[in-house]
Image 1: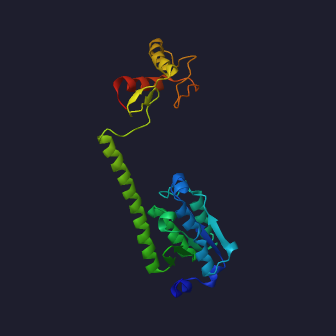
Image 2: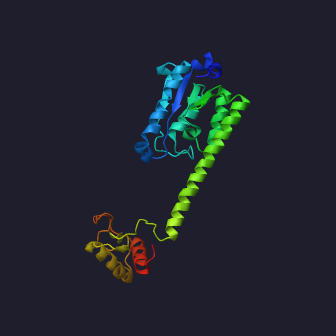
Image 3: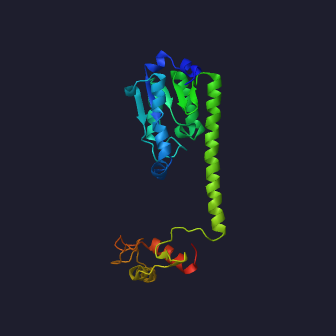
Length: 246
């Protein structure tokens, strides 16, 4: 820690709690990107080095597996904002800005509240005081870059999907009654009960019945013990099967 960093941390900050916010965007990242999660938890050591006792460091990790694009579904972030608003936070810790928010509105709201309640912000690069113009300017730039990064990532993913679709190699979840064979082609489900249900849809349509009574709905993964199929589902399935659209 630099001398400038220690100068920003005052006794008034140390009297309050340190809040360590931890987030990963998806559950898959939680499982596969374990090093990132470990690095986030390790930030508590920086709080200790600045003078916070272990029992005053509160870890908020309930948003693991939640996207940072919005605060609407992030209970952990909402709790963090509430604690800061009540003046209970002396410092907010996050590995990087993108862990806290990838939305400029949510990020600047947190900065504004931190400035009003005299709460510091710490990331992997250093300690910032949102009440100081230079620090707030830098934090604002980091927030803008974090939001732009999300836009770029989405554009890359969408471009890859569209490119694969143009080549005819994009695999989608097939409608009920169709499956992929070993060669990757979409074919009629070999399950005879599924085929029978699809054939009976023609009879039900002619009779004007809303459901096929006594016939279990064909399900994925070979499960044919589900609820009765509705005419809308069966018509859609057969239309796609006969027209070749998927």
